[in-house]
Length: 463
Image 1 (cartoon, rainbow, N blue to C red):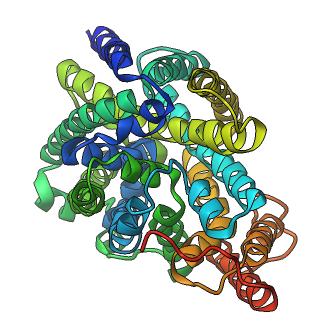
Image 2 (cartoon, one colour):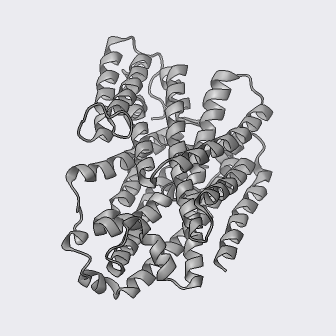
Image 3 (spheres, rainbow, N blue to C red):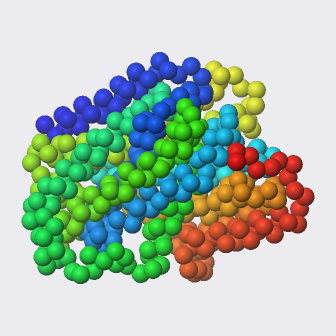
């Protein structure tokens, strides 16, 4: 029954892609859903962009490992939308007929090299996030007896299938559906797990849950910053967030959707964490990474397990498809249309979109099969985006004196500094908070080079 339900669900997602195919007339339909999406669908897609494997499965892992303090990753996701809604959503929407963050950078700095630099790093970072979700999907399908590698392949084929067919139309509509399914599923898992241990009183009395499990911040300040900052600031450089802003049908939707998404994500953040705490209470020697799988396999009835497994797949796929389309937008718009073939026809642009989506999916699959853990991939992807891209993007909106040279060398400085200091890359020397510290040389170079060079002809746009 479980395998059958999951199979039906995945085929249903593919069918939506087939249905949405009728809405695709040009590249604007494919990349920004014709700029016609309302509050319900945009909000659902915003939530879906974060409510994936790291949020649901990783949240349970952090709950089993740290206790209630494991909620900080989920809260950081919500904070990222509050910050985006407060500072950038209105400005981004008012930019007008653009598709990507590099479109803005080109408008602001008048530079193809700044466009290309951001698009390259953003594409690589989003492929990393996509690959992390494929890994998470494979771990879910493995519980059904499907080998991990085949699970990754199956998940990728379904995702690439409906995304290639209908672009952001299919992604946003499936996101809204999948978020509802995912929310119901994780709530079911949490309620059953909590009831099994005797409710909140049972959690409080569980010998395996030491007092630190009930502390708001149970880890060191440095670990807290490393969890909170990259994700909370990611919204400022998230192509997925900007893409949903550009897909909004009006300014009210563009500004309201990130705020509403953040409000919904706050309570959702606690649900998988509580599930992980209940798993730890039931099995004190539990490997935290197996918190959610253990609950599904040993605490739920077959019917409930089927619902939760489908829900987890929904959460994972809803994040993965957003990242997939973000990379496609960079390839199609920022490299092909703006650099390689500026005179491309709509037919050519659509063809490139289809091919790019498929190729990115395959590349992400290869990366997923070669990387060790979901969380390390997510944090690394967020961090490298922030290191080089945060300052030129935010500065472009708020500082009129910034120049093209300042933006480009700021990007180089932040990215190179992160690569040489991060343990995930070269790790040549140690700095505190490498995720955040890399933005300091980026900012210094941005200001110094901008003041030393002639101001750009362009001025901040979208205010």
